[in-house]
Image (cartoon, rainbow, N blue to C red; front, side, top):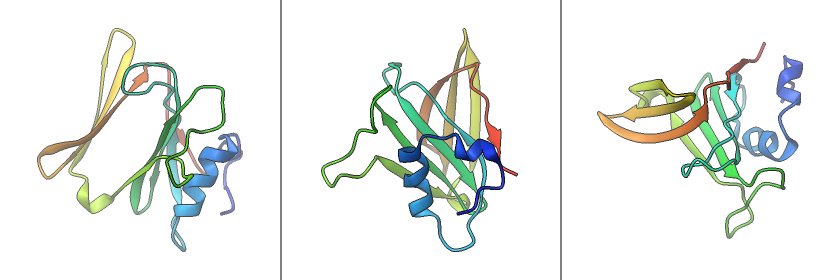
Length: 123
């Protein structure tokens, strides 16, 4: 993938490489966010990427260390085609943000972020 924006190149190689390996021919990342909290609100690296076809969620991984890998040696990755996403909501309370992905009327995924984190646009 040739990044249109230098910001994409600032993503840690292990996280960016995981996404790039999953992109299909012609699929383009549009925006991305590097959350820094896991589900237990501990610091952990992650990457959420919206492409023109789907939403990809990489991690969470340990902070300041190479990405945690599963039994097969892969970084945790979840993907949803855009057609399966009914809504993506962002909520904020006391400096903590929560992203909620809804599909078919149910909560498919959620994740916490610090409110100071902002998505970055590619291109």
